[in-house]
Length: 412
Image 1 (tube, rainbow, N blue to C red):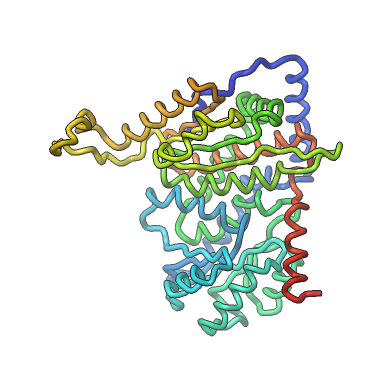
Image 2 (cartoon, rainbow, N blue to C red):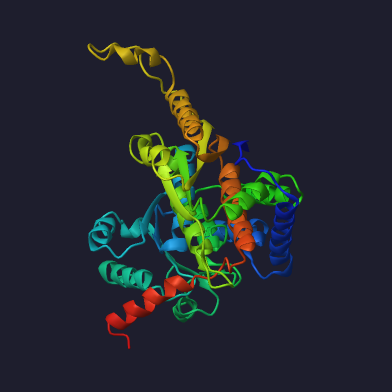
């Protein structure tokens, strides 16, 4: 269960109430019309769970993900959060960047006879993804025709789809109306994570329950938050997500792509709009970034995310160390208590310094909570995009760099 312990504080005027309801109506129309497909994934992807269960992969101990951006970040987020409560999950290796040192290091971890490979690209021609896959094919002499340990996840009819069909490789398709950064609850995330041993049906259930709760009018805080972001986007142009658990770090990275690529746009009046996303981790970044928040420019909002019960009773031992006895007051307290008290104290210091902050608490690490967090941020993104009146689902700013890259590498 997610709880929202504090919300951004502002008065909802009749005009802002109208903006909120218009945005909710707009995204409901996106869902009902089928124009945007991620809203239906919590239910529709249950079939992908069953398809993944049918794969004959009993000998597999490693799941290799070859994808970048929306084709990997969501998978990494779910894997990181759920691994502590799923110790039997298979190892997942990620190839997501063209850094030759990382590629070589990850290749050395692969045990060919115990590995399956997921080639993930919505467009089917992502240059980092295809280049790495070629490298793996050559390095391990992978047999492509009728391969039982290679899978493609892509749009139906894409170049990768055609490649899979030509080699009789099993493929799973991403709905055309689901963008890459909104695709974690599609085959992109569901199939490889289910193969790895995660309970993806429960993740989808968590997302579906929160989605239904929102459209049934039970998550008013979500509308209020979106409206606050919209109303203050010029003067409070940065949103910092401060997650108090190492296992949430990849969730913050997923959020950064989702938020940045969806909302940083040119609006219909030709004006640049958007809110810059930053993800940091507590308690580590209390000793770095926090100084900027409290005494730097007041152009930021903060969102604190914490886990109430880590399911781990590790405590600070009753040990006295000469010359540093002043920390003895914490002896006997659990680290669970310590990190959550650090979160509370830091949030209070931020609020006291005049920075707007809100908070989200997961009662525990669970599949349903992960699903709810994912759909929460997707809905929030869509609502803010509707209020800013931009196309939340395209990314024209990304395409220019691709054009230049292709030209510079000789693809004229």
